[in-house]
Structures are given as structure tokens and as C-alpha cells.
Image (tube, rainbow, N blue to C red):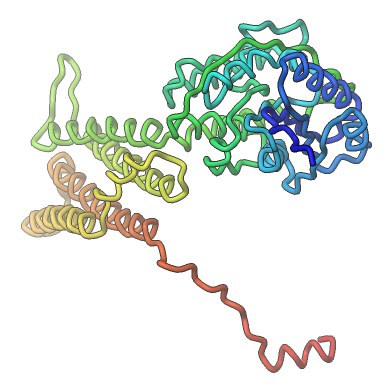
Length: 408
């Protein structure tokens, strides 16, 4: 029996009712693979098409598999899992991407890069191929945010739908997003894992279909933005929270002894109230960010090094000690304020005097509670059983059987 040559490249096309353009995409990809001298395949990951796309793809020479998870990401996840090639090059099946020019992607993958992104702005965007809102606002803004949050300085077209990658390396990431945000997840998770990511120029042509695209501008744009923010808790929560908390603590420390004049501006108890609020909100953001880092570690979403630091800081014993210390300070201040009030016969007091003690004391009590219970939540997040717990099966009761027999 003749041994079949190993498949080097799988061209992956997610599909949901793409009968108008799918056949052309498959033929272009197969022809380009042949021109590049690549042993490859075209794999169509079908998401439940009802327009005969599957038969058209097979007739054109593609292998068709069924993707049980609905959505753009679901189709790609199913296709990546069943791809036979060492490398995968994915693109939309709407005939807008340059499937007839796979060479730059193949060369970059052969050079050892883990992920090869297409850049439509460098390769050329045909008139009418990209809506102005996407071209001049959405894509540049999200690409800039991705570079800022994840250090992707070489990625200028964050959401190009045509990209190649080493199949096993991407499978190892455990990608899971079923919707359009899968495109961002792939790049972000690859960046967090330290993968080598480069860009090559590619072109974008107008969508060849007569129906509207699956992409929904505001819904899918928000899902991309949300994913970028939650994958970087250190930059979106911890750092802003630390700056806010430090500003609040400095302000509270300066205003607790008495009013503060800055030129012609006089700061008093009203400013002290906001300074205490800044300290409380900022500390909550820091703790939320730490808990998000721990959760991300458990789900393999963030680098382990950063989360290990938070696991040490938010140990229940440490959090309990800090939380109880803050509670003690707050209660002591509250007792002092009540005692002072008692000396005055529990009558009317000058708020400018009492609030300088009450506000910091109340803030300390609130911070103590937040820190204490953050440690408890962190401990719950880090608990992992040595063996999977058996499923709990509810045993039927006698009256259940009676109802089943009587139809009740």
C-alpha cells in the first residue's frame, strides 16, 4: 500500500449558508496550495448550513466536517480539532480574502512563526470591502488596545480574518470562545503564552455574497472589547485601582488633621469624603483584579507568574490578619467618636470636627470587610480536589414512582 504524503497545510473555512461563494473559495485555495508546492487540504467546517453548501464544497474538492457548536468560533474550533495539516490557514468563506495567494502565510509558517496574521491595511483594501466605521474606528481602536494591553507591537490588524498558525501549538491553548470574539481570543492567548506572532500583507475584496454578513458591528465589537479587557486584569483593574487608592489615601491622610489650602482653594471635609471613597473604590478594584488573575490562572487564561503572586498576597490567613487590623482601627476610631459625642451629651456636634474621625474610621471598617472576604473568595478559587467529585445523582423517592405510574 502506498503511504499517503503528510498533509502540511489545512486551509480552514468556517461555513454557514455560503453557497454563493464557497465553491470559488475552495477552488482558489486548492489552486494556491498547488502553486506553492504544498501538500494540503481544504477543510470546510460547517455550522449547520441548509443551502447545500456541504455538497458544493465536496464537489469542489474540500473535506467537510460538521461543527456542533454554533457560532464563528464554534465552527473554527471544530475545524481546528479535525484539521490534518501541521499548519492551519483560516479565512472567511465569503470570497473577500486572498485565498489565491497563500504563499506569504506558508513561507512565514515554515520559517517557524507560531501565528501569522494577515494585514489588510498593508496589503490593500478594495473600495467597498470594509465599512468606514470598521476601517477608521473599530479596527484601529481595538488593534491599538490589543497592542497596549498585550504588547503586540507587531500586530497592526488585530481582527484580520485570514491568519495561519501551527495547529498543535494553538490546540494547546485550549481556546473556547464560540462567537466572533474567537478571533481576539486566539491572538491574546497566543501572546500571553509567549508565542511568536508576525504579520504578512494580504488583501481584502468586497464580500461576494448577496445577503448581509454574519458580523454585527456593535454587538460583536463589544464582545471583542470585553474579551480584551477581561484578559488583562492587571492593566484594566489593578493599576488604575492602585493609582486611585493611593490618591485617596494621600488625600485622606492630608485632610484628617484639618483643612488644607492649595493657593486660593480650601479643601475640607467634603474633599475628605471623596478621598475616602477613592481609597475604598481603588482598593476594591485592586482586589477584584487580583481575584481575576487567580481565576485566570485556574482556567489557564493568564501567565502563572502573575497569579502566583496574588495567591500569596490573598492567602486567607494574610487577608484575615490585614482585614481584622483594619476593622480594629475602624472600630477604635468609631468608639472614640461616640465617646466624644457622649461627652457632649449626645447633642449636636460640629461636623467639621467629627467627620474627620468618622469618615476614615468608616472607610477602615469597609476596607477591613472587603479585604477579609476577598481572602475567602481567593481561597475558594484556589481549592482543587485531588480527585474529580462523582456526579451527584438524585435518588427517586417512592412518591416520584407513584406519580410516574399514575401520570401525575
